[in-house]
Length: 208
Picture: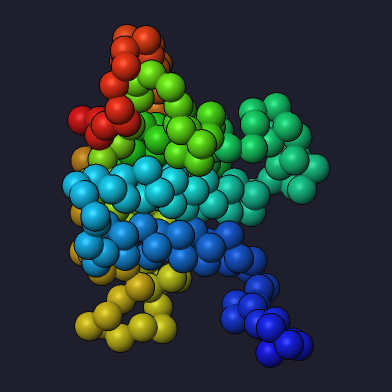
């Protein structure tokens, strides 16, 4: 404790700064609690906050990976040019810097991009929206965080085998490694779907 009503933050940075990755894991666990453990008042009641948590977990994990591989000046310049919450740009930058991830694991990040970048999950959006299904995205975002951490032993380490940090199986061998051109093509295709729905008065709903 640091004073009346104050709490000492429990995580301290080491030689390698894991702060963003740890935050990503914490946001992921909050999404897990809402999706797997909470009892919603009505179906899909937690859809929007869960989506926000998963999208932000993705952003933090990708920022951790990219910022470790660029100077502070270059990273800040990247954020200035692409926006603070640009998941597509972060994914492409991470892959360009050597992130190895299966295209299937990258898919929910691309599906979350527009709503996250435009703060739809925070404030809502009039009209229609299509985005990732949080329940399907949960294990994939967990695998993304593992890969951004540099391996399964980084964030999963230090916990018993019976209760790893992520309650899902480890990532399967990659079938189709994501590349920058594949991510750009997927993003363009998904944006086209968004444009088709934009003027329709539909509620936020899961994508496929």
